[in-house]
Image (cartoon, rainbow over all chains, first blue to last red; front, side, top):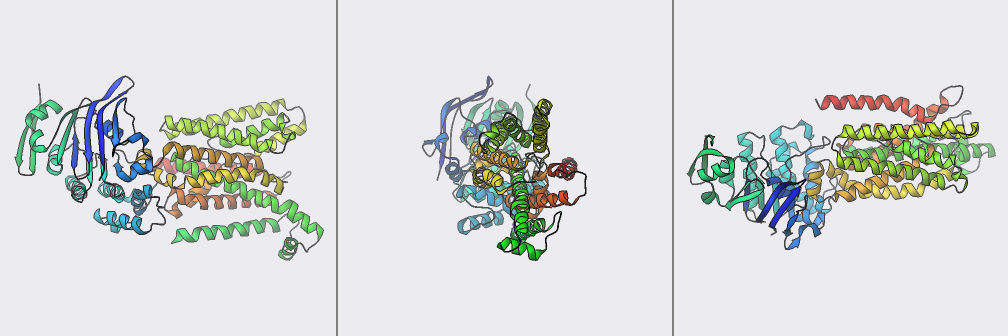
Length: 258
Length: 329
């Protein structure tokens, strides 16, 4: 179990307000989707939650302690992070990338033992990477690479996962595949906070949606309560028809608002 | 696993290369005489040639090559670029400028430790500047350009010192620093530099895992639990100390730090941590072999090791840069 709590977090950089009065809590056992237009402050909020950025005012607590006071290794054991940009400097092997997920436990990627070895093997298996273990990452397709990064994040076995657009630029079937992996991770006791642009996908998989715009949180609740045509208009300035059949959601966008 | 066989294999090659360097010379020494001299049994002449001339020279070449190979691999891991290297980034040039200044102003006469300290200060100043630049720009081209500017500036100051040299003796002293050589080095020269190298090595070894994690970019590395400011600081201190110490032994020798890691990387799955040790050994081997070449090539005056290294290394640099350009589309 772990919990990140943001209390009235504001962040200004160069006179621009990136985040304003954001309060939210991310905890194990819950799948949260962050939704909002580009520049809404989603990534900024996640970076504050990870101590990658320091808030101008407000506090970020991880398990009751100010996040900036927690050592990087301690933090990494509680929260694993899948950033939006995932550059690979070298064409390293798939197994080595996944093994880096065990960094916080002091594992050396060349000599994995015991728990580390088991965690890496399980993450590789869950993400269907067994047959790719020895491949160089520069020979993989986009879908395969996305699974490698997910496996790396899962291998940490952290109680919380923060993922920034994990399904961007993937085809629909790979999007479902990655979302199902995250869902399974949450069902097994993990907690996930995921930035998504496909709202129907978010509503289908997530327990809670956090709607953001212009650096502020506008709504925070389950899909049934918060995903409405009015909300789409408020957040994205588009007209939408929202239809729901149990857990299946569909959105039809009918144009921009005047 | 070929990874595991690589280090023993390279070590054997290194050993063989150092033996060869002892056997080969203006007068060849037979293996029998070499063994006798090693055991302290042979003629006094052989003993002097081996212990005072050939072995220190071979060891100096190996140590300097290993130092540069290791620093190249570490800097490339930190900056995530295969073209980063103490020579290319101007670290070696600043170190030899430091050493030259100490020689020029006679500080070297005060204590033998002055030259290594001056060289290391030059190297640390350059590495710190580069690291500062690396934090503020993500563009590797910018960084290489800054290194190029740094090395040109250090070169210009060197030229100024040469220009102002009061007599031919100082001039030739200064020139030997800029060209780089391991001729006439003694074990004392190596021992003087050794403590700095040892401390630098500790810093590099402590950053091994962080270098691996940095293959995934700085943001992911942060998420993995890497203390980025600490990792940067350690690699900078480590490479500064080691490069400065290497320069204090042999002057500026470029490109070894590019060639060795480039050859090693595909053999260790491109992992920056696993690249370190083999790069060091291979760097040592390259320089020992280049030094044998220097001694064998008939020339009116002996070729300088740094000149030969640059003649091989500069084309290699261009080759790697072209390959990289192609890979990036």
